Length: 281
Image 1 (cartoon, rainbow, N blue to C red):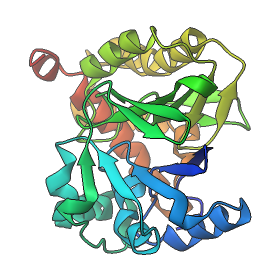
Image 2 (cartoon, rainbow, N blue to C red):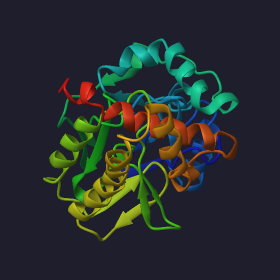
Image 3 (cartoon, helix red, strand yellow):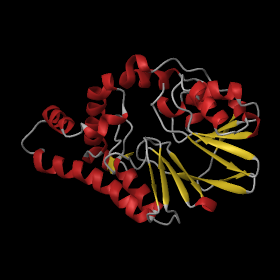
Image 4 (cartoon, helix red, strand yellow):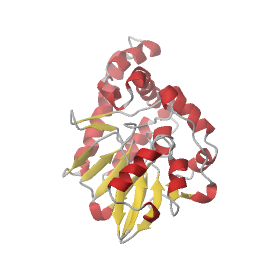
C-alpha cells in the first residue's frame, strides 16, 4: 500500500540493506524505488525488520522473491510469526481492515535471528541491531555507526515533517510503557545525530538525547492526561476522551482507519501503562 510506511535503503561497498518491508502489497513500490536509486536487487543482502506488525513485516515474503541474495533479519521471537503469518495478518486486519492484504510465509532458512548488539557486515561497514522493546516486545532499532544514524522503526513514535512534532505509537495490545522507558534510557548511549522514522520523517543534525526527549514528551502528555482524568472517568470513557486528543497522531494512517487507529493508540497506552502491566517488569 503506497504511503503505508517509509522504508530506508542503505548502501555500503557495493552491498545494500533494506530496513522494513512494508505491507504485503508494498513490494512493487519498494522495488521500483530501488531501481530509481540505481540499487541492484542482487546486491541486497538483508531485509532488516524492526518488528512483526503487518505494515513493517508484511511485505517480506514478496520482497524475497525479487531479492535472490537477501535474508530477513529479525528478533528471534518473530521467526515463527513470519513462517506462519496468520496471526500477524489477523492482527493487521483488526486495525487496517481491507488495507491489510494476505501475507505469504517466509521460509525459516531465509531468516536470521539477531542478538542484541549483533553487527551485520555490509560492504565496508556494519549495521548494529539494538533490542528496543516498548512498541512491541520484539522491536529492534538499527544503528549505522559510520553514518551516526538510528533507524527507529516505531519504538520512539511517529514524526511529522509538516508539524515537526513526534506522536505516540502505543498500539494496542502490544505496547508496554515500562519497557519503552527502559529503551529510551538505553538509547542515550548511542552516538547518533540522525533519526529515521518509519512513519514518516527524518530528524538530522540534532543530538540523539534531544530526539529521545521529544519522544518522552509525547508519551508524558498521555500520561498526564490519564493522571488528571482517571479518577473521574471509567476506562471506556477515558479511552474515548484520550482518543479525541490523538487526531494529529493518526495522520500516518489511511483516512478510513484513523478513528480505529486513535482508539488503538489510546487503549494501547492505557493498557500498557496500567499498574498490573507495569508490575510485570
